[in-house]
Every structure is written in structure tokens, then in C-alpha cells.
Length: 217
Ligand code: SF4
Ligand code: FES
Image (cartoon, rainbow, N blue to C red; front, side):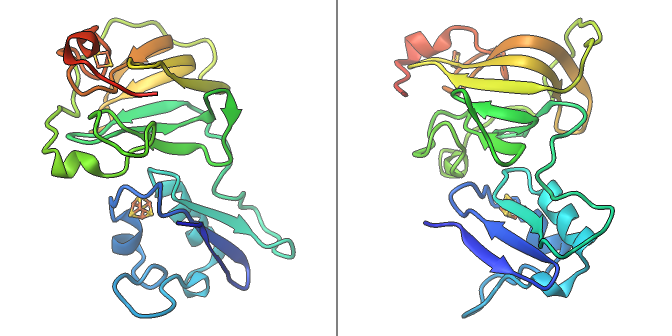
């Protein structure tokens, strides 16, 4: 499905349904801007001031929503797709890995710093989450153990995500691994994250993809 683009007076909302993981953050926090289950127009950028629209984009974990100010709109607020000061991956309970960083996926710079990547192995849109973890009844803690780690000299910068064939997600760059409740679990410059769903040491790969016969590009 193509990205929906809805222009308001001060900002334009871009909605990419293929990225949406249905966390419903947008429709619950701003039901006046995102009105689900209606016939016709359901995105209303003029229902909130531009800074509030930017916040909606920043709070969308999947990067499905991007909010860009219209050229004539002045103000102190950046668009919602500005790079964060700290690169993070949040481990979502029974769900995907939610990244926020200056993302490169397979070496390609991404226009949105947020993306949710499959870790159950079932997505039909790998490396992205497509919500298949729900039907698959994927069970995985969002609270991994806290590792022993050192502070990162730099906390942001490019983060490259490289899905390895039939294997894990290789991550290179400065990254803080954060639990679902916000606890810092690890700080790394390179790591391999499970995307087959079978690791006994999630969110990290432990080699179980081989015995599981995991197949993915
Ligand atoms: S992933 Fe983004 S667009 Fe989808 S429901 Fe959540 S906040 Fe809304
Ligand atoms: S990708 Fe899951 S254990 Fe390696």
C-alpha cells in the first residue's frame, strides 16, 4: 500500500501502513488527528498545533508516521524525523525490536529514525515487523537481563542494521539496548540480535537459528 500523504495548514502527515505495528499510540493519544474506522478522510493534521503533530510522529515506534512542517511554517520545532541524541533499541514484550537512531538498513540511510524490526521470525515483510507476532502467539520477555557494560564515548551517529541471510540482525554503531520499561540493559558498538524467534538468550542471537532451520534473505 502506498504511503498516505495528508497536507494540513502548517504540517504534512505521511502514513506508511506497511510499517505500522498497531501499537495504537497515535489513535489513543490524538483521536482527533487519527480517527480510525471511519469512511473517508481519517487523518486530520489541522486538529492539533504543529508541535503536537511532531510529537505524534516522534512517539510512533514503527516510523509509520512522519510529520514534516510545511515550508512556510516557522518555529522552534524540527520535523519528526530528526536524528535522536541517543541511539536506542527498545525490546518490546512479545513483539518487535523498536529502533530509534540515525538508521541505515542494509547500508541505505533511512528517512525516518524509527523502525520496528521482526524478532519472531514470522513477518512477511522482513526485516520489518508486520504484526505477525500476534497470530504466531510469540512469547518473549521485554525485560532482558542487564549486561555488564561500559559507557559509550558517543551515544548517537549512524547505526547500520544488516540482516544476515538465514541468521541474525548484525548491528554496528553506538547503541543502547533498553527494556520495555526503560531500563538500560546493555551498551554496545556491535551486536547480533535474534530475528528467528528461537534464541534462548533474547534479544541476542545464540546460534539457535541453525537448528531451527530459519530461512530469510
Ligand atoms: S505504529 Fe505508529 S502509526 Fe501504527 S498505530 Fe502505532 S503510533 Fe500509530
Ligand atoms: S537469529 Fe535467532 S538465534 Fe540466531
